[in-house]
Length: 252
Image (cartoon, rainbow, N blue to C red; front, top):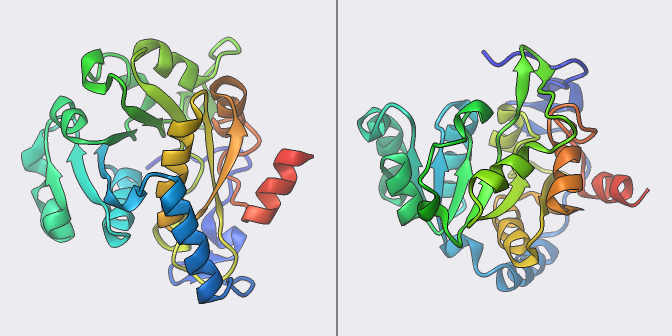
């Protein structure tokens, strides 16, 4: 099991159970529909994209399930080979397929890294992610429950250094997998997922995916400063916030 982090919140502690959020009324269907239509136009039709997910543990598998439920196609990869993903692909149906990591990167329009941080360097040939949006959803730990000491650098700064041709966006790494599984379709105010990056168009694409999943995208700024806010030890890591709470925190 993943080690617990000091101060980490379990879903039960933020009013979440396996059936969803016990929260305030959600926006009306018409308002939500208008908002989603606007965001999909702005964010390059996120639901039409094929998303590659490298790393199929609890968090990667959860992301795959909610992406498919939201109308996305997914290409899954892990270190053990595509044949080990047959049960998950069968569960997800025709919208899912499996491949080796480099093949998944080649077939996907957007790629999400959900492997342990120490496996990121050298995981992919740099050409496989050239000019692609690469979502760094990894978390750097130096030991059980201890954020890694990166000498003041953000973990996503290193990912961008290792894959210089990619447009790296830090996102989808701050939420407990049980929360991710149900919160996007639960009643109540949308929870925030954060984006940090140096390319605005890439952040908009990721924001469109987040919106499709039923969450609120909140921009934390450039890759370095915004990414540090999200990584282990940062103030936004594993801290479920509603859209209003997140925007208030960012603007304070």
